[in-house]
Length: 116
Ligand SMILES: [Zn+2]
Image 1 (cartoon, rainbow, N blue to C red):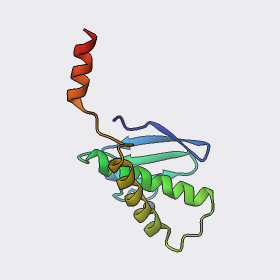
Image 2: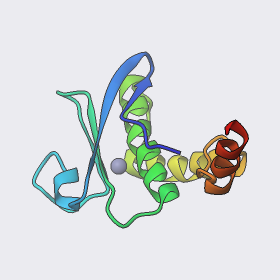
Image 3: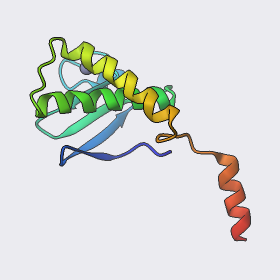
Image 4: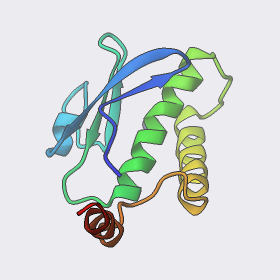
């Protein structure tokens, strides 16, 4: 499955930028991070290099959760911990139920064969 270039979260559109250097994923001091949200630009940055698709999705969900927590003013005592646990839980739910899935190259080949 292709990684999204934008996502709607609570009716707001956010752009997603994928970067190959973990320092470029940080909006602040250029720390090495897996992802971050730039509130001023409605953009999520995700570090992508040498990571599996499921791991990348966990980071996308993590940043989405930060946006949801902030937008709805959810009272999370430890926002970071809440986002980490919920993103892990939702990621597992979405993959285990086939809502998110890896592209099956074999299936694509067969579809191509059928058409011709
Ligand atoms: Zn976080």
